[in-house]
Image 1 (spheres, helix red, strand yellow):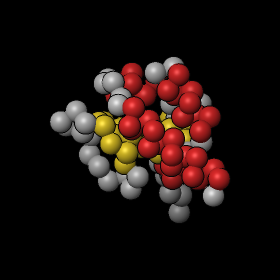
Image 2 (image 1 turned 180 degrees about the vertical axis):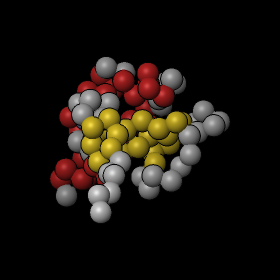
Image 3 (image 1 turned 120 degrees about the vertical axis):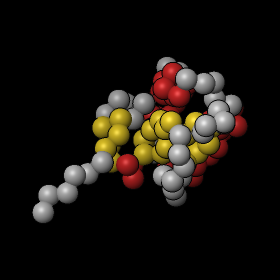
Image 4 (image 1 turned 90 degrees about the vertical axis):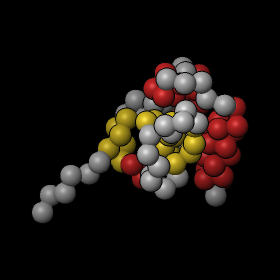
Length: 90
Ligand SMILES: [Zn+2]
């Protein structure tokens, strides 16, 4: 049985990726920005690959901020980067 696999567009490389290859960043109803590592938070989501290069491109082009329509606190960027660095080194 063919199962439809959910894909989302990475804001860095603009390629469709499987959800488990992506990190989701969510803008909650109260406007706060959170990392959604389990894919369970509600709100408007933006996706990037689990790759530092995609993240950096998304930051540089402000694709994340445009997608979520809010400015993203530096702490959020820092924590995404920390996770990606950890994954790439681990
Ligand atoms: Zn990407």
